[in-house]
Length: 230
Length: 245
Image (cartoon, rainbow over all chains, first blue to last red):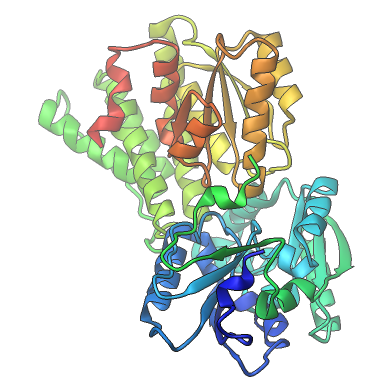
């Protein structure tokens, strides 16, 4: 659609700014023309800081260093809203959050959400660099004791009915299966696994950026409505 | 987790205290909500009632601003979910003490509100806080829970003859259901008689306007004032807290 933005160069040099939870899945597509920078998963909890941190990073890149910026983020609770690359074109996946990337398409994510709205998604990257219900419980218990931690976690998680581990194929999966199962047992909810797909990550890094991507011309800000079908 | 929980086990208020003392105690009540101090909230609220401090003053200048403060800290990333939930629990203690007293003065309810989280969205921490606050302000609530379809919302509004429909969503992927529900309400011929309030982390004022909502709440704490405005209750001293904090 609009990847002609890079037509001056057949092989654009790109800087990928992405969430740490998808580092292994994205690094598979290292091709010598792409640099990566990964950010703490916790940014999604404070969308206002997410946009500030990413904006600062984009502003620090010198013109001519790259042909474009790629964001390894979805709308992420409006965390990317307002971001603007003044010196570069910018590619952004047109998705709500990273689960579409792990599953291979927004349609796969939508299908899962509709069939099981109460799904808590885990990937090996999330378990390693993000959080799980058990890690949350331990964190809460350190500050407030077990009884309060149990109450808080119940309030937070009571509507979840399933843990879904997405196997993206880049990790030795057994240890993560074990952890994901333990979490399902801890919450007394069901456990399932699903094979993810690398295709969305591949397109994110290599293009062509057509369906499911926003190609932002330099100086244009990301807006929430670009992600919504209203 | 930033601040350690503090407690006000000994609350000393001089008998027959004046305006200045009331201000001080209201500030402490505010602080007790922020610091998640259930015992402090209970003692301070009960003591102020005993000293015949105006119920609405306790509510709108102590408890609610405390909750607004906690919500703002949550938004800024200073508080996390445990702190927000524990502040809500402390607030609830104060509101439960005040509610029967307010109801006795007001005689009856201000209006009936159907509340729920939209289809395919299971997040209810903000919604439950809205319910506590609306109930505390004198509204009757019909809580439909989470993952509520547009049809279920509209049926409930019709059956209960509600004046207001309040909807929440946390996921950007479920924002579309706010719009669908408002459209379904209009299709049922209730678009004019029933007012809609929308809120939740991803909702913005522009979005609320674009989807045809009658009101937008940035914070759960602004829900009572918006609900009162929508049904034409004005000039009530208890609606003015938002401007004061």
